[in-house]
Image 1 (tube, rainbow, N blue to C red):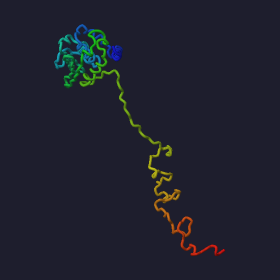
Image 2 (image 1 turned 30 degrees about the vertical axis):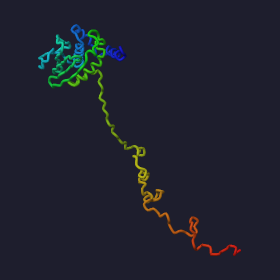
Image 3 (image 1 turned 30 degrees about the horizontal axis):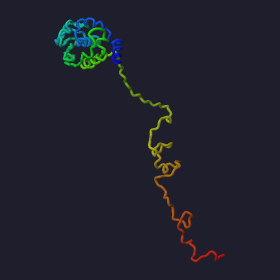
Image 4 (image 1 turned 180 degrees about the vertical axis):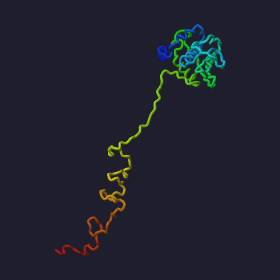
Length: 260
């Protein structure tokens, strides 16, 4: 036996989900003659123990039985037909039919709600799922957990709200916290919303644009009426000018030695 199968067997033997299986299987073990029978017993166990179904006999009659409490046990001749199964169940005063047909290598199972006509379809392979016809569930159904999950998802859920899981997942609800403002809180501790640099709020609550023209205490230059960068004409022989003034040019043929 490989490791995954060994783990599945251990989980099946220790699972409370299958509590009561041995007692049910003992009541029908002598009548089991084929592997499809074992899978039908598992379907019956799932419906009666975990879905609150009660079996009211065999057949495909769609009329509701009168004052029939039903039973958790399988009725006589439940596998009397070698090619098909027809079982009738009652749940919350609603009649259901569990029908199955044996093909060459598969078992096709249907669950029908007689009132709503909702029907589900499940196809399983008895030769690969059933290990033996006798013994405990770990021997007869080595992967019982996997088979039950398929029964639950493909056979039960499409027909009715099957609340058969042991673990109830709480509904998580999220609420948006209400933002409150303390009227006595210091406004300086309140976060300031981001603004572009040229529009940041300053201590005078005035934008920087045009502040030098409007705010005499800004300490900066105005930018609405800028001063010209060249305030006047060029001065003669100024240190920063490269062209000399003609009025200050030396006379022609002038030699400094003549004045010595």
